[in-house]
Length: 226
Image (cartoon, rainbow, N blue to C red; front, side):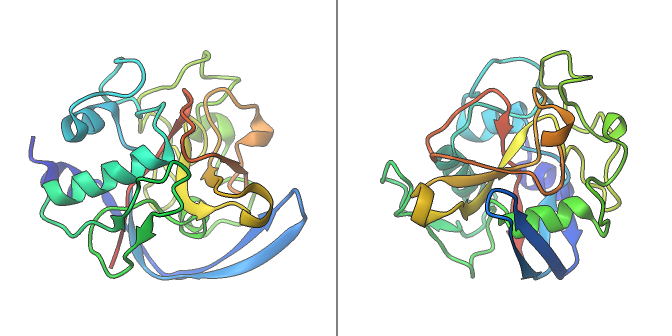
């Protein structure tokens, strides 16, 4: 497989702008400036994960289903491996600490990485300001219509910027630590999954867990800086 062509063709140019984030637990809100960047149109699939890593995490079902049961630390390692395989400079160093606290992001690197949660929500909204970027049954696989399973990527309607499954199907790891003063090394994941009710499938939905967590509706999506 020509990884550079396959991955490169699936990256979408996201313009710069501003997004307002909100933590519903503390009712705190804040604005973040987002520089232009690239984001994958779809979550990393089982086929791509297997081709890069040499194995598939989770069940070996459809090749175009998003890979799941991947921890934050494994997602970071995948980004570095894909970057090296495509001749790019890896974004991350470290990674031996079980809590992931030794991982350092080289922001000048041109390789693949996880999006920040500000980038993620900004891209998810794609200029919209509502709870989500379209009618839930049309854009997302969630508890009501998923049949209790994750589905292949890009089988629901995309948002205005051509990004699929930003809401529903699988949650997606982001770079950020959720709240280090309260939750220590816990990292953010966004978007809602195939097992979630409608209230969990919103552009603003935020969850968190330890960077070693692996579950059957949590994956990740690739980003690149300019």
